[in-house]
Length: 77
Image (tube, rainbow, N blue to C red; front, side, top):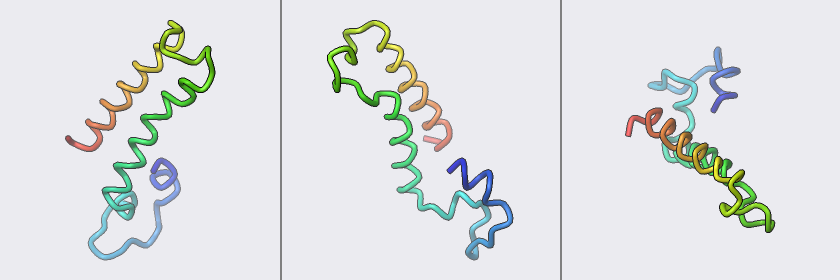
């Protein structure tokens, strides 16, 4: 979505579409945002040291929640 916003200016858009990011269906945008949010939790549980029992890994939860909040504001929910 960032790439569309950055590089999509000047593209011809379908009739009735005023924003380049609206070319991507809403359901797909929703899934892409959720996938982005879950990146913060990537790798947890894959190795013994990558668990939420390790205090240094707990910051991942804050990042995940912050991204979910940003997503919620962005989507207008």
